[in-house]
Image (cartoon, rainbow, N blue to C red; front, side, top):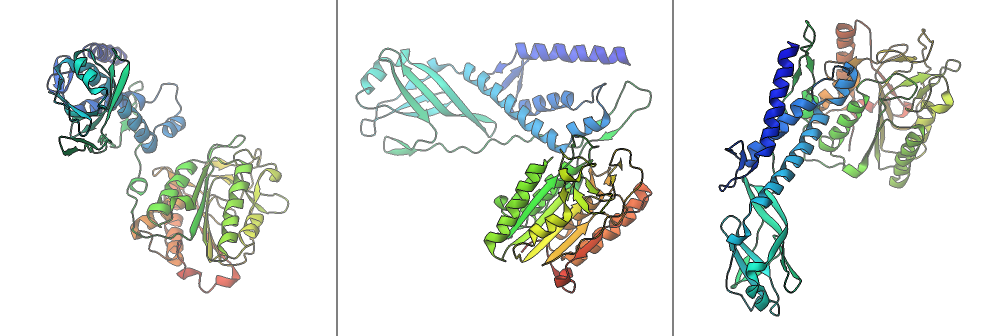
Length: 482
């Protein structure tokens, strides 16, 4: 098998080199590769697909966890966009080189509007402003003009000229064409309005197979529908603000699987499904202690500025930890240590900051546990016993949804690429398009997480609700955003 793989690799490299040596633009305005014509869109798609196929392969020396972090739907889409841009730039260069400017002809000068019209068999008509003083020399030296600075936009599988510099080297004068100019020639307004470039690069789920072992390993590196089918609802909640933190890569602790994806996807739901303006949402991933304190200050400042009219959402995915002595619960920044509570954010302090100024509603969503456990093991070094953190008393219009109760662990849902709690939070927002009250949302999350955790992890995980005394009889009718 190894010999065949190497042989095929050599063939592919040879074909790629040969293609690079024989690429060009044909007279019909298509890409020529090895003597065959190809549409521009097809060329970009094949280029992207070919490069992506190589990029998304798992290296022999790459751990599965690192591979899945490197290759996912989000990174694959970003890589495809980058490669599509590279292919388009390459096509523009080839197209620019293929244009024969000697085929360009000059029409009669329009003295009233001080404009020349150039005609080209491929580019069409080009209206170039030339002041009346320079017009005679422009015409006299037309066959000696130099053309540079071209730029094109791809629309309807055709390159359209959007920029051009024409230089009269005899008089050292430059003239410019731009499709954004409104230029009149012979009493006709010539406007060139082109559509944005649209490259449809396939975003299908890919499957990895290793041919270096007898047993094949299939890795699903695509995304679940909760990541891709996010409802866009035509509503606006300008007085709702969200602070979203996803801590995954820790300096001195084990990673929290999928925490960044949890936070990033929830951010998309706040904007598209809950109707929060982009400026109202702060997303921070792998946040340090300083960053977390700064963002907490931002959302408390918002509450102060809006004088009781703001609705606040705080979402956190990452490590939680207990103080072994006091049983106080903490949120752990990525530069913090589970053995030093001074490097973490005390949950009781966070609640007090959020209640310093009145707010219409405060909802806290935490895909974390505070028992000393992690999503895939124990958190603190040398600790083998889970700790039950004490429960905080809430003040104001507070609702707190936590991923797990007491000494339980908040587990990942590896098949879906999310924390178990976050997955069902997103799924219910997707199903209801965000139109759900906190009571129904809490019931759905609790039921599904507790059931799925037993099935997938053979461990109990029961999400918990904690509310302030002020809203204990009304919180179920609350919504995330207003």
